[in-house]
Length: 125
Image 1 (cartoon, rainbow, N blue to C red):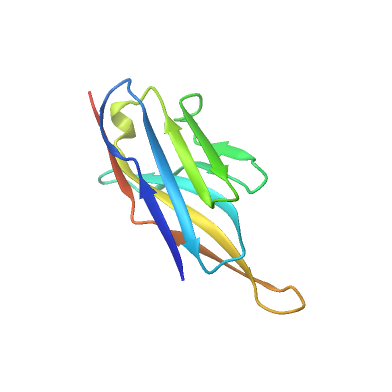
Image 2 (spheres, rainbow, N blue to C red):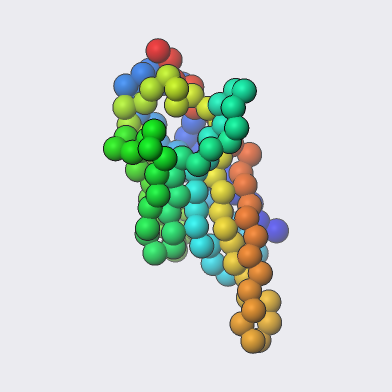
């Protein structure tokens, strides 16, 4: 099995900063994309940012220029630096990892996404 654990959420005033961390562990050979998603009350879960194993990043328009995603492939971790936080950034933030495991000698792989339980970010106006 694979475990995904987020940390770093909390209460912050508008304009402040927080850094979220995500750590993946368990039975996999590698991780493809690692991503941060968020879900505000009454809204659907949405992509905030993701990063490929090669370091290619992708951001939601609403966070471009304010949030930065990074990862450490050797440690199977990802971080989300959030600056200039706004009230509308309030949400539960989830980490998703796209894992890959070789399943036979021919090199066939099994891929599966795993989610963490989320960490709450509250931005006060």
